[in-house]
Length: 136
Image (cartoon, rainbow, N blue to C red; front, side, top):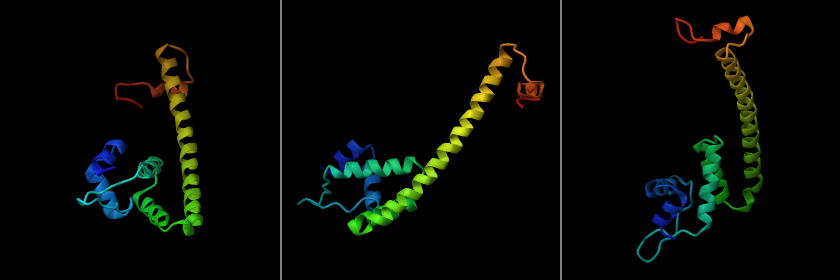
């Protein structure tokens, strides 16, 4: 597929794909007789994986390192696995922290609902409502 097709199917712009190639995030594409980049379907899977790494908070530096290792082939399986294991640990920690924060938000929302309904709440929380000075 040509770069325009890859852009459409991946959701990335042509400029982004060219930039990714320039910095080494995606491998240089072979060219056809007219000098146009030609990609195979495996590039879509690679771009999808890169997007997932980004969505989990992996920075560009680490994605570039991973892409470099991947480009070197099977001899880099161990460092790639180790990299993903470290990143997985970070993602698990992020999930635990976010889950805890979700509980805090749920508790605060529940408190406000009770206060709005006129229910009696612990007096130490009564200042959580709006006052003449704003939200506390």
